[in-house]
Length: 300
Image (cartoon, rainbow, N blue to C red; front, side, top):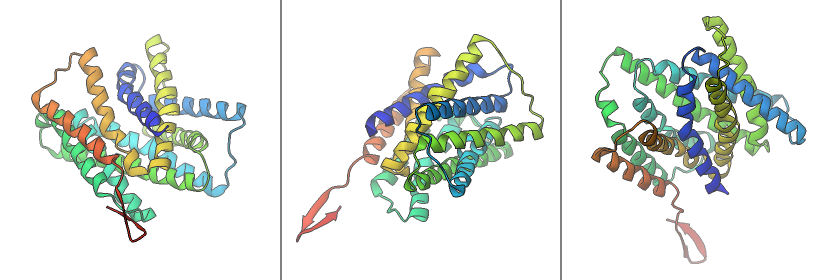
């Protein structure tokens, strides 16, 4: 079951870039994100109410959902969108892939979970592999004040994403399932992002073309309802650090799709990067060996 959820998350998030590209044009990007999560929240609430699976939440649960919505469905997107003005998408992907390491560190700090050496090594290998995969973009990135600002915003967005993972873990430990917390989190996130748009003067236009509506539906339902629910379920089952390796793998899926759709050509450094990413994936999910000594189970 975990493998199915993992693959589903990687495949969906690895293809959402196509839908994101189709949204560029008439509607401002922040407004598109508001539409995306508002629609996703509506779909989730409709499903939960019709199936009678909407869990009741107390005040604490709602407050955590507000924080989760702020981290996962609002601030991180503002950070990444703003950063993309100054740094390449490849550099943003590399920065975002550090979520595996940040999740391991945050799980240690906030939950006292031991940081597994294989997770750290696998995450580092995946990060190095992504660096090689996007090397042409990274090498072409000019060093400037804007670049540093973009890197800072990319890191801030990644830290927000990691914080959202921790908050989801808290909710799941309290017995609240991701379907319910995501519904409220997306609603709160869309509301806060909508207020940000109003304050910053972002226009709320609409493009009724088949291309825009189709991409919006893909981002809202598979990209948000299904993928975020699958991913955050993995966070609760596997731990934040292992689940976050999705952030390393989905750029790999995006590059393979790009090879078919846009003619991306694999280079020798990119192939080495591919090997490193896959080796990192194996390390992250390698189960610790158990050695029994004098009747005691010892992890090694």
